[in-house]
Length: 357
Image (cartoon, rainbow, N blue to C red; front, side):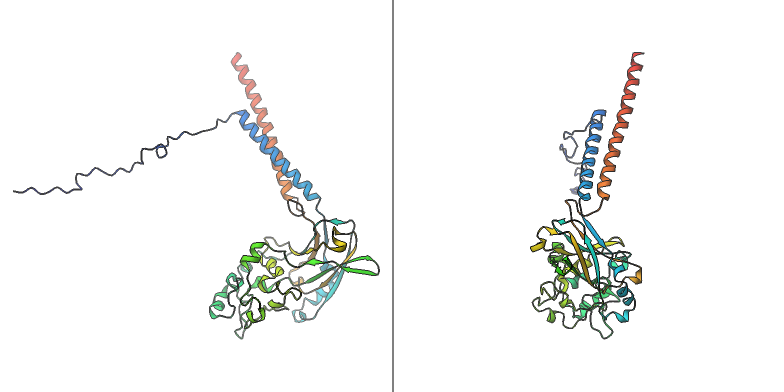
């Protein structure tokens, strides 16, 4: 009889699941493991503590040199505040003036911010009420675009089917007060302070996240077939009458507003001082005034509006928190190191005494 051929797989050696016999896979590579002793640990604590103290003190000194002037103009404009309580009067213009003085010259670059209190831009429903694809310049009148704007509800389309551009609660609540700064060197002279309306946003926002729809050279045509948000008094292509390149979704004020704040009390950059003529060194000391076209209502949420003139340091604006945090952390680390040193010396002394006995 003929013998059956054995199955080729029956006598095959078992496949090994062990890693290869290499220095890396078998963990035979030379390694360095530091030995923790008192000198190395204590020196590390002292170095880290000294570093934190140095950074913290430097930040506190730099921040203390920042100059700021706050004006709560919602208090000055009480008549306009009362007028804006009734939404039916939103189209009626209201202008007010807030006077203040600069006690000493503010040298260097000066930034103008507007501030709001008790305005919760961090509310989840508010934060997601936007359509980023639309803000990238997608055609605002296509049916597909209107359907995807459901994130923006209820600020998506008008009752007649006209889509809103831009849509959403964030865009609809755009801060739309107009603030002008004037300098009064004497009782009979008024000089309007030159302020820069552009260059106030992050580069990534201006050039990547926000793009006007095509054709960009004719925004009236680009936004044809869409309507402005209900609370807006101007169309998107007419936000800045002085600079045609600062309109639509690429408007600096609009971009800054769309970057929502994390806390209910916040400030946003509004203008920068143009350092020309009398203001080449900064803002001279003297009397100033704000002329405000009051449009943004705050009484409904018991808020207030501020204008802040401020300078900056290498670590930012006038906020002591980070400097104090570094200083306290450094002091605690050094204090801990001294306690550890005392415990080490005490134990060392006890060990010597025990060894002698």
